[in-house]
Length: 541
Image 1 (cartoon, rainbow, N blue to C red):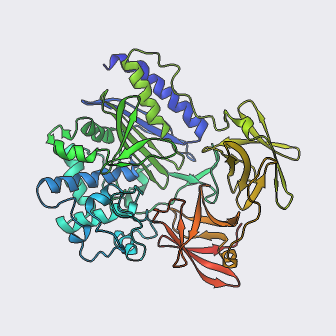
Image 2: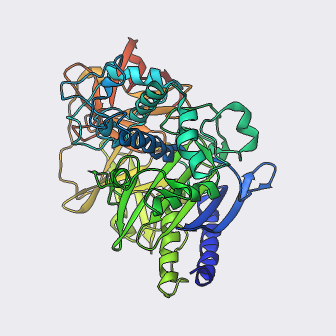
Image 3: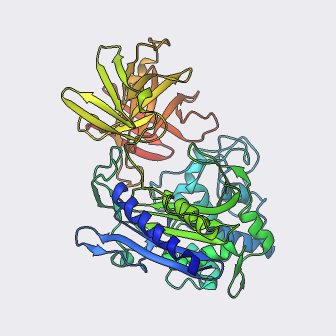
């Protein structure tokens, strides 16, 4: 098979090179494997932009949440031996853990599948214990097993279960039971300060309080130590290809089974619908499962401060891809495109028309948004389109807009770069657009124009910050009579006031995330507590 894939490897490397130039990702390492061995390994870009150090194929990266499946494998191993039962309440193994809930007990399986109904976690503390104790105050919002809500906190708790049962650190457990048996000799199972100089420089957005434009300015990211089970592994592309081979071989490793066939089926089952606006997929016990053109894809992504990773395995053709990236910039389309190229090559089809780099400006329906929009105060916005490009006209300037999610655009311009433009529809037609707290209407808008809200909500609007580098800041605005939380990357969540005076974050009634506004001074909340993380009001816009 390998000789016929040489052209595919070349096409993949060409695509990666083009995509990095278009996206602004500093560097990326790609590993491709089949069930038997590593087939291809290539490095692109710079490990250190300032010193112009080229990326090496053997570079180590923080792999983030891919680590979760390593913890799940150990839990499955322990169940095989009868040491635990995934369907037992987690409090059976951690008697001190108190989770605020009115529903039935949360089991290990619920935590492994992100169906416990608990918060994602803000990583305000580096301690798994501290994050776990938050659950006594912000508990489960839904009956366990029914609703997929991704939770780093849940996997931190699972790591504590492993430590309690085996009497060792999470790092030592994963090393002894997963990485060493697989022969992953260049993999570390915790992140500590002394390893920093041995890793590529990880990059974050230079401005952390606004959406990053394609190719936008980056800066070295903050470094922190970590040994929690939700994401503390450092590895190379070739080592991660070993892990992918184990998945392709359904739990079998060179020296014998890492987990039984039954445990592997549990790990990779379609347990819960985890679909998003961008993809249709399911989640098992630490891995994602997708159906792509009749093929079953198994994998996971990972994100750390300055590092993004992905593993993706095609279980039908028996090939897998590893991508490791040293920045905040998403590169998760590369693995999917690489598999498309590989599968076409295996079938003897033309590969040269496949995989094109992302065009940050293209919007095939650009004409739907063009026209004039007017706020209730009389401010005006004018949008024009040319072919597949949408532009904002501001005086003599014509600002090209970057297409993001559906009906969402970014203007890389000092007057507009803090927020995304989000267009709204009625009966399928675009009738409004929002930008931060501002709301503009098209002439065809026929909905409500006057809204009311409690006067106390004025105290909530503002910009909030913390020293925690993960979700470092967010803004809360009043728009159309409602409070909206705008994350640093431009994503928005509506806030719904609950009986206890806190607010649910998100439109879904099942969502467990909560925010509370405290310390009202001169009509303004000085503190916002977002799912246990404390943020202080700042004066910057």
